[in-house]
Length: 128
Length: 128
Image (tube, rainbow over all chains, first blue to last red; front, side, top):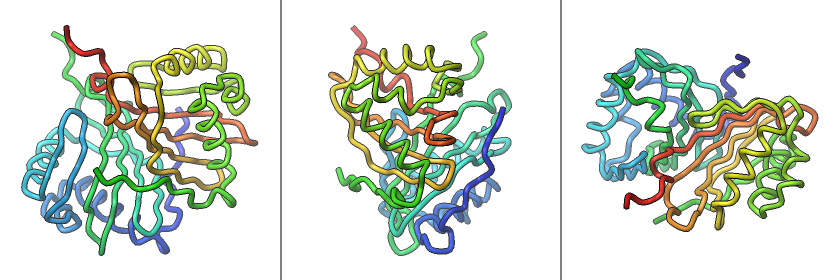
C-alpha cells in the first residue's frame, strides 16, 4: 500500500504543529511524563465515546491507550498558529491498518483542546 | 462548546487542498455528480471496516453516506502539493457531535486516495 511520508509542512512557522509533533513523538516513545508537558491543565478532549476534562483524566486515558501500542506510522501533519492536525496508524499487537486522527488547539505551547477520532470496532479484540 | 472556524490555510497555494475543499463542498451540498468530478477513476479509499476501490464503488459508498446527512460543520482544513486533511462533524438526524477526518492524496486535481476515519458506534442508530 502506498503511504505518503510524514508531511512536516510548516513546522518551523506553525507553533501549534511544533507542540503537537513534540507531544506526538513523546507518547509514540511511551514517555508519558514528557507527553504531559504539552498538555494544558484544563485540556478538554473529545474521544470516541468519551469526553475527557483536565490533565489528570487525560493522563489516565493516554496511559491506557499507550499500553496497547507497539508503534505508530504517521502519514500527515499540518498546522497553523493555533491548530494542528495529525493523521497516523497506531500499531497494536492485532491491528496496524486502522487510522486515527487528532485535531489540536494549542495556546502558548500547550494543547488546550483535542478532538481524537478512530473507529473503536477496528481496534476491538478479535472475536473468540 | 468552542469550535474553531474552518482554517483555510494555504488554499491558494495548495492544489491538494483546493481539490479536497471543492469535493467536500460538493458532497456537503448533496451534489453527488459534482463531487465525483474530483474523484479519480482508480481511487482507493480506506473507510472504517471497508476498502473501496474505483470510482463506481466510491460513488455508491458516498451516495449512501449522503442520505443520512443533514449538515456538515468543518473545523479544520490543511494541505500541501499532494496531500490534504479535513476535520469535520457530519450532522445526521441523531448525531452532531461525532467527528470525522479525511486524508486525501491528490494528483492533477483528482483524489486518488482517501483515508476516512470516524467511529462507527458514534453514528449507530439509537438502541431500541
